[in-house]
Image (tube, rainbow, N blue to C red; front, side):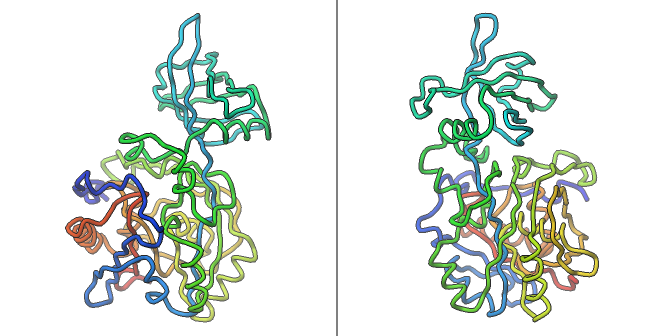
Length: 362
């Protein structure tokens, strides 16, 4: 499909730079193609009333690491400031990262991170650039390894805020809690599963009291989630692979929910993509451990998820294409226009949608 079909205009003032407090005070746009009206305004804390007993909510329990490191490149007696965002661990002392500005780096350069920061026992950690790619990616070998390197990253790093926030303000200590779900457990993401940011312990208790069950899968969200589709046609876009896992116990429990007539409510596009990646053509969810690069565009036949809770997404993004696939492109454009007219807050720290499948969807 043409990428420009997924474009829309968003006033910059609607991009949320901080989340609301408490988390479940965010607004919720309910979109149901089979209802009248199709679009209704609500609140996140309304979820227990909007779902049904027997429904299963599937959360992504990945944990965001403070993957953004500020450093100084030293070469031939000169120095230049650089920022790197760690994106994939390659070994005990090696990471692949995205560098800004990458043009300041070449193989063999030394980078000192956290210079003068007393939060780290050593005050800093150094790395050597092993290689630099064509799109800003670099391979780094650190002078520390294993747990010592992990500790240094946690002490010296900042939360890797999305570019539309980071371009307008710096990450701070508040983001260490704001940009993390209350159920984050499995460390490895460099972006938050943002639909999960709306949940509080109290909201999860209220859902359980109403007869909804909670289940956890893991998909380590990568920076590719923020990238627009630059190809003129969606067929020309390549998704970045992300590592995910569905345990045998979770697969068995969710299959039992489906068999009993309950609905599967994916909390976030990451949970949905992982569930769909792990489901066979027979509609049964299977244990999964590996990488997925599933790219969902209109025409995709959803195999397992029945409803989707998700935030508002970037124009021309793979995530907006996914929600258009789930509830219909025309309806989602109408929903987003309604949200803009009603001043909903957009993107990672913004409000959310509860989506039902398009009419006639299998």
